[in-house]
Image (cartoon, one colour):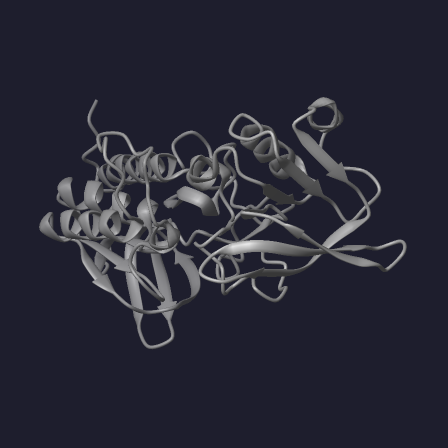
Length: 312
């Protein structure tokens, strides 16, 4: 059998990727992590992570990412900062091409994550982490009893609005259309919730503040009129964009998330996906870590099978 450069290549250095790297290297696989930007992924934007098991005191995402990286390196995983352009497979060997190199491996785990879709209004980037959030379960508890604006009209937006209504009775929810696009049952629960003030045909025009969010400008799309309203936080749920463009042959759902089975296996043998890049009902740091561990365990068994060393 042709011998590749590595046993396993992990694409993405976020929580899922680093978890996979750690478990893979611990299983004595030669592991290479390819990360195009910064190790840690979306965990880096979390200022205080208070719901990760085993840490009773909040820690910031950067600190957690450093721990994940150190642990993966300690087990022997290598990390290179390169952007993946394509993945191909010939026989039992994968070829991963980056902007500057070509690597081969028996297996690949795609853990490239997803980017929260942004509205693009003035103040959104400036107040990110200072009142602007894309995760209610991550940041909602910091705004208990505060005035919160929720933007969006899909399942995620309705789910998160309902979650936030357990923390505050001052929730305003705006959607650009005249009705929600969420499933009827969840949409009705939002409409029936007296803690949530739903405003249809409304869009966010601007987010204002000093050191943190203090107000927003909302536009009525029917009349064209704008008005400013005090707010302490803005939670935006208008979808996300998975980073899957380089994986052309893999099966994806209608939103371009990678489809896997319970072992994180895609439709291509030896190609796995973990974390926010795949179809999953719950996107949290702890879920991504679990996905990475499962994917690496599956890879180890797959490679043993390839080499005729499968346990029986």
